[in-house]
Amino acid sequence: MIKYPSLDKVIPDNYDYWIWQGDGEDHLESLTCPVLIEAQDLRDLTLTPDEAKELMYCFIHESQRRYGKVNREAPLYLKLKEIAKPALLVLKAQAIEGEL
Image (cartoon, rainbow, N blue to C red; front, side):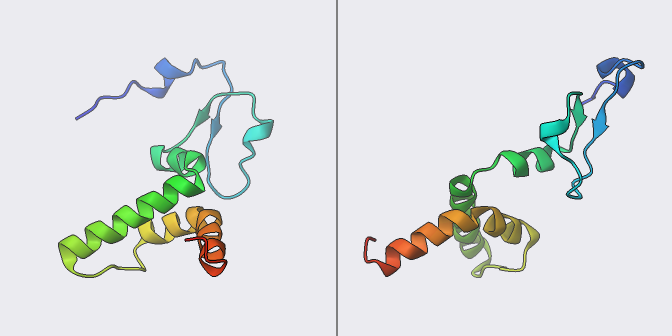
């Protein structure tokens, strides 16, 4: 088990910080202080549509391999699909135009 330092050892008492809420009211562009954020929230912010598309394909492949089906209502699948939407729209347009 990983032991993390306590907050007071990471951020001094006299230092302002922001606790990430993920509710749409966090505006990174306006923050000038350290931000405490869950690892998955950070990954969600930094995942590109193309990366999400590839991870979605991996999820589909692995689900079919392990379970013989894909749960398209799984939270991970839905989140990846949401992030990958721009990349998926490009693929769809290319397929329609016969570029694939």
